[in-house]
Each structure stands twice: as C-alpha cells, then as structure tokens.
Length: 195
DNA sequence: CCAGTGATACTCT
DNA sequence: GAGTATCACTGGT
Image (tube, rainbow, N blue to C red; front, side, top):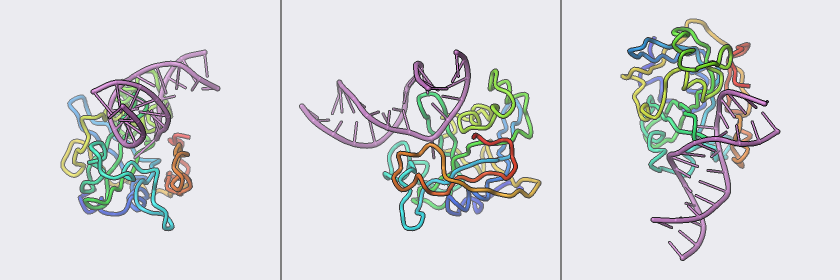
C-alpha cells in the first residue's frame, strides 16, 4: 500500500517509527530503485519539555528550511559538508517543522542501477549512510519540496513486519538538549545500518 | 585518522 | 556586502 497524505500527519517520532520497514521507491526513465528503510532519525518538536535544538527547524523559518515547515508528505533535501545530499521526510502539519532523516536502507529493487550510481561502493556501503542512500536512490536538490503522495519518489508499506530498536541520534554533539534524545530508529537485526 | 567541499547563518561594517 | 565558523558525511590511508 502506497502512503497517503494521512500517513505523514504524525509527529517526527511517530513517523520515524512507522518508516522503519517501509519501502522508499524512486521511478525514473533509467529504471526503478527501491529499498527497505532500516535506519532513520526524528527531528523537531519536544522531548520531556526540551526543544530539539538539533533540528534544522529549531531556528525558525528561513529560505533553506521552508520545506520542513510545509505540509507533511513532502521531501526536504539539504547539502552537507559541501558534497552530500541528505533526504528528509517532512511530516505533521503546516508550521510544525517536523522531519525524519533517512539514514540507511536495504536494496530491494534496481540494485544494478544503484551500483551504477555509486561507483565503486558495494555491500553495506551501497546504501547505509544518509549521503550514500541519496546517491544510490538518485535524490538531489531537484527533489527539494517534492510531493511524496503524487511524485516519482514515494513510500509504501513493507511486506514483512519488522521490530524497531531506538538509540541516541548520531553526530549532533553541538545540540545542547537534542544530543541526548533517543530519536534514532533502526530495524532490529538489520545489517544495513550506517554504524 | 582526516581532508575535501560549499551552502548557510551569523557577525560585523 | 564581506568575512567566518559550522555542518543531521564519505572515502581513502
């Protein structure tokens, strides 16, 4: 079942849990690539009364963060370290500023195309890691603000039920409160984790 | 381990 | 407008 607008209206944490085990699909002229989401992180909102100062939406609406404050079910893409694109699933309602960073997935379809896009990388390194995931799936700046409900990139339910583990988020030491939020979610037992 | 890369947001003028 | 610090990362050593 393909996700509808409703599926994207929850908080970042709710949506992140729901995303583990779901399938990210991208249809292009070159072919279809699809993968099961095995790792993601929630951004935005509050945890035990503390605001998420690790979220890009924390400082408010700016040209860059416009998409995060829009309606759920759209894509927020940003460039990091001048080289890599990271893809987020915007959730909640207009003005909320909730997003889920996709950190890793397990290839299900179009593995050859992913390999072509990734150059030398094989195995876990093909799609485990936020920058690797976007490279393999062919996601870049042109998908900023794209609609997951009507576009060529979308999410559907996974076929198998999976168990979800959680831990602290990675690489946000700079966030005074946010660094301790247990908002990283992973598929239990999966090898496709960014480490 | 650590260099590479550029957009972004912030601080001055 | 210019200068600068920072970054939700990756790949090769």
